[in-house]
Image (spheres, helix red, strand yellow):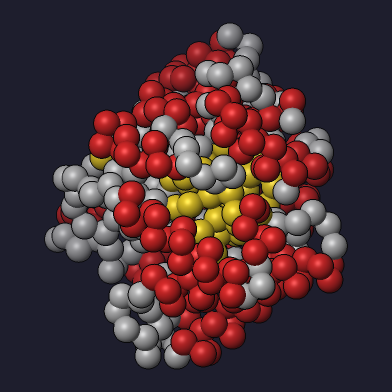
Length: 433
């Protein structure tokens, strides 16, 4: 896409600007991101993963076309122009079908890519790093690259059929599993420059053999491990000195920057340092729904003190009951005793709660909570008790006093740190592209 290519060109020219990508499917998170972009005059990149959104609905129940429709509806509501929104697909490949043979999984991946392109997604992360049931473990670099080139060919053919702007691509996969590491962490090995060089070369060879040499300048990002990650209750901060070789190496690539996954919970300073080190595309996901959960838990506490028992939504109670009754999204990840599991289910940084928001009973409870507190606005003293930053914003007349605004503000506290790292610190605004 021209916007992304221009922003990358600015960075490669020494602008030190970056991009942040919102990886979430929750409507409140998406609306908060759009409102933030509108306020700041920025473009917003919104990405869905292959397990969230695919041709079979994913865990959200949405196909790529459905997700595009949701984004369009929210954008109209917010008043954000369609050309300010960039849709991306993350980890597109056989991830959801690793239990199948490689032939079956790749056939489904072909359809996945086709559906994403037809639905208007134009930032595509090609991820074929995972082994299928009849594959060696791990896959060799050459096979990963060949499969990525195959999917790129599908994307290009589909784009030429449907029209619109040309897609841009991200390659590489040297990151832990999406959503944070499963085990405790103390330190991570930064990707070596030798590994980066190999990844780039084998992909270039594979793309050339596939007849995609002309596409290569549209590969804008390479996923590597810069040494940042989080597990359930710990964050490993970015250490620029450990990634110095990587930062210097990517300067030799004329159209490519690094894409950093799992940047959630990094400090504002560390986010800015990532961008300065050419990790110029920052992915954020669980931190946004973590902030949503924090806001909802605070509102639940306000409701407990303000609304009569028989009228309460009891969102937190409803969520925890659903998670206990249907532990499939967390039981393989939270491995401690019952007390530890109870703590992790609510407060883990990996935020497995995000998988449960689409549950009808939880959606109903959230809607009722918002309605309860809107119909009977609580005293500001209760807001001060449980949402002190939002209380300050209300008192400063920076925020309207209603429930959704309180939620949006909580999520925007996270978005503001990414916005500052990518745009404000350098004076580069995406609206100038």
